Amino acid sequence: MKNNFHTHTARCGHAIGSDEDYVKAAIDGGFEILGFSDHIPYPGYFRQGERMHEEELEDYYQSVQALKIKYQDQIKIMMGLEVEFHPQRDPEYLNFIKEQLERCDYLLCGQHDTDFGGTDFARGGNDEELRQYLQDVEVALSSGMIAYLAHPDYFMITRPNWGPLEDEIGEGIVALAKKYQIPLELNLNGVRYHKRHYPQGDFYPYPFPAFWQKVARENCAVVLGYDVHDPELLRDQKREALILDQLQGLKLNILRDWIPAKKRPA
Ligand SMILES: [Zn+2]
Ligand SMILES: [Zn+2]
Image (tube, rainbow, N blue to C red; front, side, top):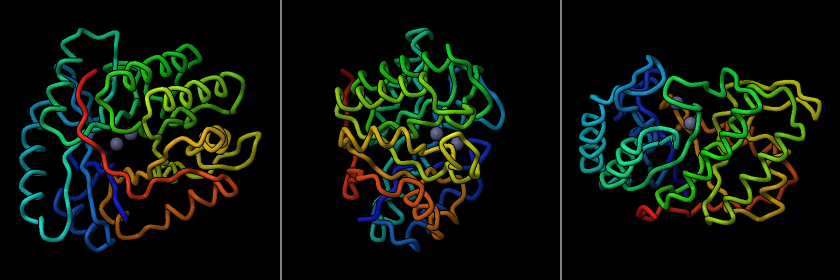
C-alpha cells in the first residue's frame, strides 16, 4: 500500500501549489491514502514563512474536508496537522492542540522550534536546546495524542557531527518510541538540504545513518513520510530511492500498511 500522511499546503508560506494539486498528484502517483498535516498555527504569534496564521486554520479544515468528499471515489484523504509541543507555554496552548485533535483524524509531532519565535533547528540550536528537544519530544509522545514522530533527527541540519550528545539524544528518542509504542518517521524531505560532509561520511542531514542504526537495532516501527511542500514530489518519487540508499544495509521495520488510529489525550 502506498500512503503518505505528511503533506503541507501553501498556507505555511514555504510550500507551493493548491490543496487540490496535492490530491491530483497523489492520485497520479498511485497513493491510496493522502493525509494532510500542515504546520499547526501558533495562537497569538505569527512569523511569516514558517506556518499558517491562526485565522487560516478554518479554511484549511474546510478545504481538506471538501477534497475528502470530492475525491472519495479515487483516494482516501485524511485530516491532520503537524504539531509542536512547547511545555513551557501556557496550558492554553496544550488545550489548543487538544481541540485540533478533535477536528483531525490524526496529529503528527514535528518539533522544529524551541518555542514560539524560538530557534529553528534548520538555522541553529545549541547543546542546551538539543537537550530541550528531547524533553519536548517526551512531552509530545506521552500526551497520547501523537500518531508518529516526524523527522526525529531533524536537528542534524545544523549539527556538524554525530558526537556524544547527538548519540545520547538519539538513544533517548529511540527509548521513547519504544516506551510509548509510537512509530518514527523516515522523512524523505532531508534530500532538499543536499548532501553534507560529516566525519562519518557525506550524507543528507536526515535521516542520519547513526540514528537509524539505533532504530534498526531496536526494531522500532518506521513509517515513510514524504513531507511534501510541492505537489510534484508525489508524482516524482526519486527521493525514496535516495533515502533508502543512504540507509543501505540497515534492516528497518518499515510499515507500509500503517494507518493512524484515532487518538485521545492521555
Ligand atoms: Zn514545512
Ligand atoms: Zn516538519
